[in-house]
Amino acid sequence: MGPDDDRGLRAEGEQLKPPHSNSRSSPRMWIRRVLIVLMTMFLVAPPAVAEDTVGLVDPAAGLWQLRDGNGKITGFFYGNPGDFPMMGDWDCDGVDTPGLYRQSDGFVYLRNSNTQGAANIRFFFGNPGDIPLAGDFDGDGCDTVSIYRAPEARIYVINALGANDGGLGSADLSYVFGNPGDKPFVGDFDANGEDTVGLHRESTGFVYFRNSHTQGNANAQFFFGDPGDRLMAGDWGVIDGTDTPAVFRPSNTTFYFRHTNSQGNADSQFGWGSPEWLPVAGSFGALPGTGPGSGCPVFPANSIWNARVDALPVHTRSAQYVARIGATANVHADLGSGVWPPGSTSPIGIPYVTVGATQPDVPIHFTSWPGESDPGPYPVPANAPIEGGPASSGDRHVIVVDRDDCVLYEMFYAFPNGDGSWNAANGARYDLRSNSLRPAGWTSADAAGLPIYAGLVRYDEVVSGTIRHAIRFTAPETQSAYVWPARHEASSNTDPTYPPMGQRFRLKASFDTSGMSWQSKVIADAMKTYGIILADNGSPWYISGAPDERWDNDVLHELDVIEGSNFEAVDVSSLMADPNSGRVAG
Image (tube, rainbow, N blue to C red; front, side, top):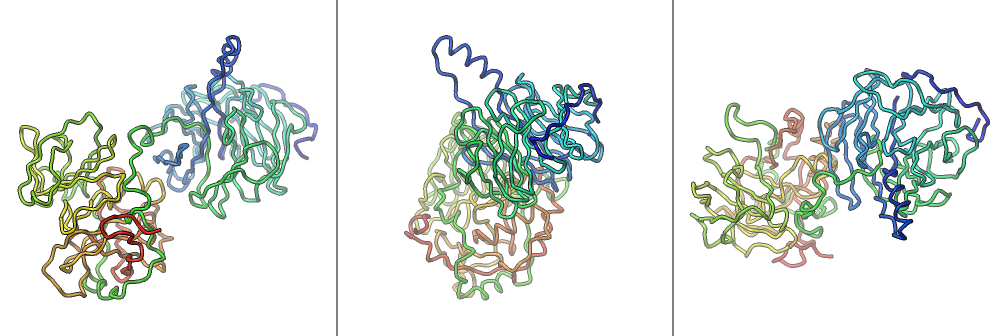
């Protein structure tokens, strides 16, 4: 039987118990409705409605990735492997935040911010096999969790959240809609401020929805999507308060959006994600790390740092370079959580600090290469993190990112002074929006005359699912030469079988990363696509990253299985548009 079948309305008050699946809530509409009425009285146009956006959840890792309207992604962990995700405005503040259903204990866990942390609300939910539906079902500006019980094709609407580890209580109403096996989704399909339920019938590819919580024929039905698509609804395209369908297609990891509730081709689309990830949608508000001051690129999109090298030719000296670095030497991720050695103050990796325009500039005294340093002052906090920790006798790199002016400052062998100034062997300043290189022959905080920050593996980008830049690495001995985009050599060895500074390598396409955990797989896949760039003398195949307490050090050690023989040197000369610019040709 279908959505137009006439089946009786269930009596109110049926007791419910637990769900399982993925849903969404419409934008908060009650404030808008009141404002529209008031503004209409005064002949004033209503305010704009916020656009809904989409996210993806990796159910195997509990990793959430939410995308803002500009395509920037923020990621965080919430829940356990196997939890089923949803988004809703649980605290009525106009922002959709994570919820999940844990079938192992029958509880729903709701959080009121798009950040990692504990649940703010938890309660027992439904029957095993129930599908949770998140939405504002009575138009009061607050989302609740309702149920679609698939074997009965019945919807149970509950207009209050459970609390204090209790159950949901009685359904406010229930009704039959659709056929067993239909996939439910939620939206405000007629812009009246109240969410209702739609169904996707995979066997026919049809979408059905009603505009009220009553039994009856579908108010709209049309063909959209393919079998296996994961459907959701949101206010995208024409932002008018009307929710329309979208699908995430696992077969090609692409989102397809329809801007009207009618049959037709997708109005917009973009690729993102992984086939096993589950889509969510909603109005996410200002996402952490995507608001004002966080929009600086790490050099332009057409920078050599951000260029793919997976299709470039193999360098003619590839085998020699690999042999000199170490064909049987293993990759080591020089990044992680905690400190090393244990009990020290040395974080694992090269740290950096982000500052704003209010950070005072302080004098920098260059002690070794003042003639190849960009003069101060630099906006370096007195407590800026130092590579190796405050007591380090190593490289003592200090990296500062000015998020407001989009300027990067880096120092080598840096020591703070009591008056707020710093001593450093040398220092470099980079405009993150520019492809300018340092003068030819100049060093930097790195031996190759390159920026360090651009090549660091950072946790937040790994959480986003993709690293889109080359990764910094070291080799025991290099040639007394450098290649674009490097600007400086650090060796007296003229043997051409040793790699020069700036040489790009990539992990061979044949190396199988499928069995790796997600953190290490993202890094390994980036080494295939964007490669690694030789930036300093050091241990063989040591890739650089920033310390972060969220790293799983055991998982990062999965990269140890990669040997030097799994890499090949690549020839990037075809990408060079100008030897004095980092811009790629084309």
